[in-house]
Image 1 (spheres, rainbow, N blue to C red):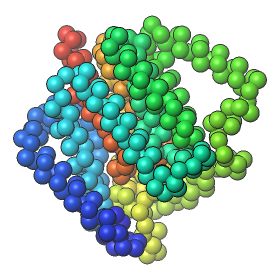
Image 2 (image 1 turned 90 degrees about the vertical axis):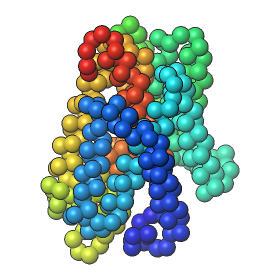
Image 3 (image 1 turned 120 degrees about the horizontal axis):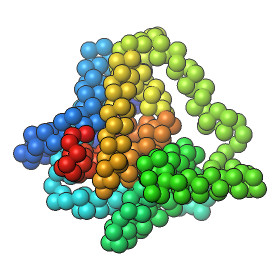
Length: 369
């Protein structure tokens, strides 16, 4: 994709990607539902995402690669809107929930297929290691776990099936970042679940105490599978990179270098790959972007606590999945960065939350969120 705008070598698939985004945009405009979904997302955290990527689009005016930054921002805005329009066709909560879980499963399968095409079939877990489909698997698992105990029998059957699939691929991908992110999602469940929160917390504390006390090497082998000591200490080489990026971010602290690109100031320009959403924000849009992120986090936190307190179906599951995604983004930025495969699942859950969970909370007689 970068090469289409003058960075890197030739990439014939870049123009295919642009064509796909253009077709989605035309589909949105021809659907006649743009005004409907825009109105439904008013005063929600989804609207803040629009504001952030609008700022990314404005970085056209100060980016060293203005067209590239603008395209990447437009790409995310189109995909976000396309998902909103697609989910607006779902007739009810149950149908939309099943759609999210199915989409998550398909994303995992496609990502596995890419790994197969790159490395071939092998029985070595190291060849299947990733921090991409594990993010999707973790979100799916956390959502299902958060909803399972308060669901009816029909929902439980669906949640159990997809939840176990998510748990399997979470471990299969051997991503340490996704393990810890999933733990953050489970922690969110323990906080938000009144009836089952204490049980979750006690079980986690007991299990952790037993395993750390007697099977520390086993935990290390599972969580940091195939990693050497120096890889664990440097977070897979991320810490040295982040230390260098601090200086790069300081060079253009307030507005950043332009969305999705980094400039060293010495004629070197390359695509932004900081492996951390916070650095993506600072490098792309600087302090201005970070302020928008803080507003997003506060708005989302309010929505989560209000809907969970009112025991709206989907609230705890969405909260757990989004918490997992945001923590995972500290190692693999699937939000506040460029659109990638696990971003599709994060955005789908966020859209589901905005279209089917928040309205149920507002209609419960307790007023607006």
